[in-house]
Image 1 (cartoon, rainbow, N blue to C red):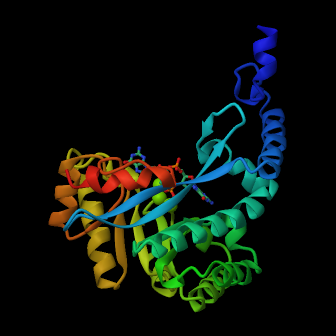
Image 2 (cartoon, rainbow, N blue to C red):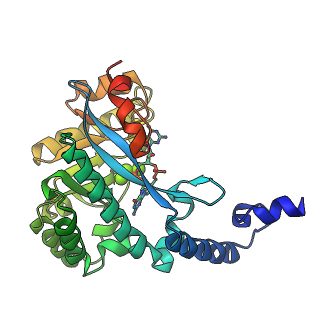
Length: 278
Ligand code: C2E
Ligand code: MG
Ligand code: MG
Ligand code: MG
């Protein structure tokens, strides 16, 4: 027992560590080690055009592969990374890796897009536009194929600063998307002021379609609003054929979800065309 536990370097997920502060400290130390030892990787979830079931692009999603081969999803560690500021370093790596991925795809003739999530700390960093610009230059990635995803809460608070940052990013030629749309508190008058290109309908509104009338009305309303405001609209968390049909009827043609594919490692993406055109 003792020996087996000694090999398990991830005590911090165990039940007996109920001291939350302690647990965060342990995760923080493990995250520093993970950065040093390059234990992060990106998975890619396809974005599908449901008019022809083609892959138009991917969303990059962070994973942590521990030395004992445990794949840890971001919700287990991203808040610690955020509160300790480690997310800035990890986030920069995510942009490098995503851009290198995009360049590889394009060099193989796959004209796909890539969506990259930004954390609040990253978004609030004055140096972010410069950092991205340098990465774009060094990797040769096409900014027109890149979308940065932010959440509504990042746009609250200092609205002028947020608008300024969005404009700086737009100047690089990238697109901007509001992730988890509908779950925050942004008013429609705010929305109009933000130079964003895309709304991503949160999974919580999609998951109970077609059973929940309210959710169906909300999703239809978001789609209609996006069209009126000339914004692209993407539905996330699509898991069933009924949901695909509902979105098609309401003219939301860009979707992501397990119905088509979970996020995958780059080397697994080759099999997707076969899977999606079933
Ligand atoms: P998100 O950006 O809204 O990403 C969507 C999440 O929903 C992903 O979880 C994805 O795997 C999951 N998902 C996609 N389709 C389905 C579906 O059909 N059903 C269900 N049940 N889930 C689905 P994941 O990869 O665990 O990421 C969770 C969150 O962690 C992300 O939400 C995002 O907020 C954050 N995150 C992930 N990667 C990054 C990153 O590189 N940087 C930052 N700052 N945050 C990230
Ligand atoms: Mg996202
Ligand atoms: Mg989302
Ligand atoms: Mg979400």
